[in-house]
Length: 588
Image 1 (cartoon, one colour):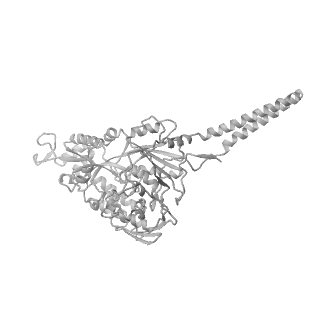
Image 2 (image 1 turned 135 degrees about the horizontal axis):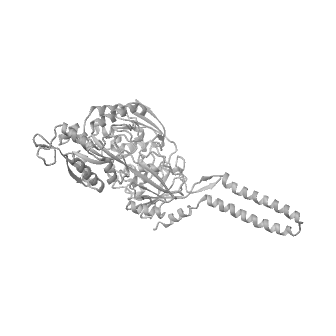
Image 3 (image 1 turned 90 degrees about the vertical axis):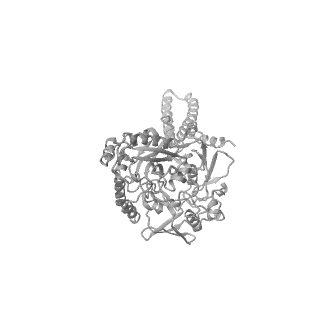
């Protein structure tokens, strides 16, 4: 089937409400003036000259007063949102698993799942923690135990009751040995206990002030999945399993290139204005932008500036910096012991031209990163020590450390040429990573360091390099999402799979401060430890962080209520306030 019906609906919703009000006012005035003229024509033949002058003056006053009354209506009333209408969102890619536990890094799955499923908590526009399926919670044992009190009378989209059984099932799945999703490490070692149908107790292996962020993961229905082995969930995935508790529910459709969601009438929260949200899928950003320009879609997001400056006054634009970064990670416990040398790591940091990488790889569409805690996250230190591009300083550090080009082959040596300053640089074999690797190779070579490039396909990179930590130097990107806890990315306990720490090293200053922050009891008390952690990071250079990508959301201005006042945890967070979006309104 074609997509025209939804598009026609949207076009009918595109009328300008203010223009309608003006047309109404002018139409009423025109009718009134016509009747007044006929009335005056009949009377004027019967009046004296003086009476005609007086009557004309009175008529003028009456007409002016009527016009003022009509037009004042449009000035003293306001357009207010009303329910109804369709929003059409364009996405690059295709859905695979519309399930929050299986979505992984598929942005299409994550976007759609966001509107269908709910978590115990949710992240607000300022990254504050808000109640969702849990109406409240108690934090006990200094952040080691959480008791969640669930919303009553919540129903799944198929009409079944939501209970504590669903929470227990979801969290047990996330830590099951057969679950291999990206969320696994966040829930390792937790104990989930049902107290009653509306109360759940969760005990953590160690205290964490960040668990409420993890609790925002979408809860899946136990009654749908209980007879499916966890290892078989991807293989047995069916669209009939797309059952959530969120504001929108999945609507089966014959459309091959779209997914339609309709407003859930049983939603426990404040119901959104939009009656339906339709997602259309495109092969690449260029085709998506063309569809937006032609208004085949109402909105589209871009991690690349394909739109350049070709926007119109009717195009709304919101620009964000995503909470993820590209970095160069050092494996200090691997086969190349030279990486344990602090002077070498510091020299490599000075010899890395971050701005050149941003300009040539991302066309300037990125923000430089120096700290492992990103701007907008708790404890971020904007004054962290920075390694600005400085070839002379890099060369000086290596010279002081005893490195010389003994055999004059352009590569620095020690021990009369028996030890060369050479590293294997591993990365995903894609255009951007290849370009980063080439630029790094060039600037490092200028100080006498050889980088041997080792591109790998995505599957092999994860399986053969990252999981076994089988690399010397790694170029890779990490998506922090809503997780503000740097522990999972930098503590030495996380350097083995399934941990997420890619800088393989053990340092007591880094570990101690991350541990103290986790057990501080509150985020405000954790900040001093995060400041110390960042200082240790800058001094020790376990990695060279490069940049954060930017994200731009374009939306037809006929869609009202969209805001850029959101501190994104991911691009999916653009839907944080979708309940306030509207395309229909009336004057009150």
